[in-house]
Image (cartoon, rainbow, N blue to C red; front, side, top):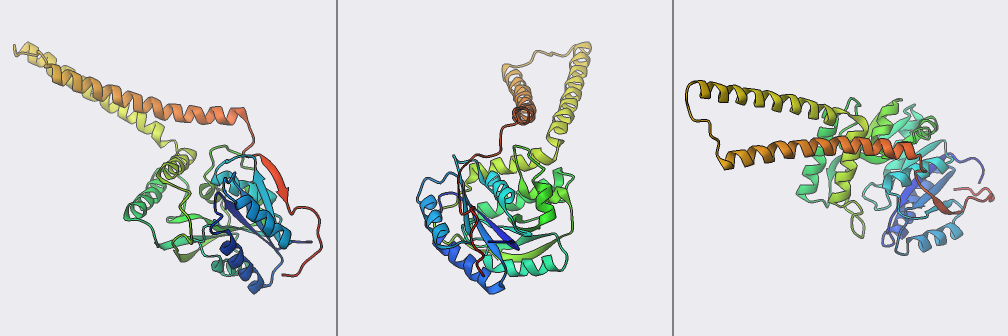
Length: 318
């Protein structure tokens, strides 16, 4: 296809219901801006017909390329693979579910042409999401900003445009427990936002249930902050101080001749509380140790089973 001006990376996991519409809207946007481009779909171990649909698209459209993972490696790994294989001078990351509108890509390109190296979408409103989901998302972004030293923009996801120089830097960051939006903030460069209303899913069910959202939130906090470990130290000092104060109380009560025989209930409650705190702190430390273990193994972030559309083909005008 020759030189590619724009790469669009689309992670896919069980999205057979929405893929035809995703492709249609992306293609319409690309034709509207008249730019050389590639649509790079990353099939993250889908179990439905997504792989078949993507290969059909690649056979019909020379702008479509597909990476098939050997299994499900996760959304962040799929984004990473897309950036590793993208050839464009600018790379846009967008999910396949159409909650982030492809029609914003021209506006992102305009900001890029003004000189910005990162253009991210900022969600002003979230359509089709429960009150609980909106509340927890708001809480997460503000908690993340509070505990990290990196200025991660509020209410942003992975929908963004990256300049080639940013992509090249991102390709150097191979940590295993990935939080892409945090890494993009960490690398710096000139960044700006485009505000938009996040739409409801076009079809299908969310691929980020509460369990995965909590995992992503924890990855974001532990990848960019050691404050959970510091909390363990602070809490340890506080509990030690409380124990010392209680010891003084017992000694003084004994000197004054007052009864110091504790009840079974208070003993059990205190023991359970202290043991629970100890187990929580051990769990936090274990999480960090486990991450060190993952990094030490140095396994690849993903395994590509098959590539489609990456062979040399003729140049096609958009």
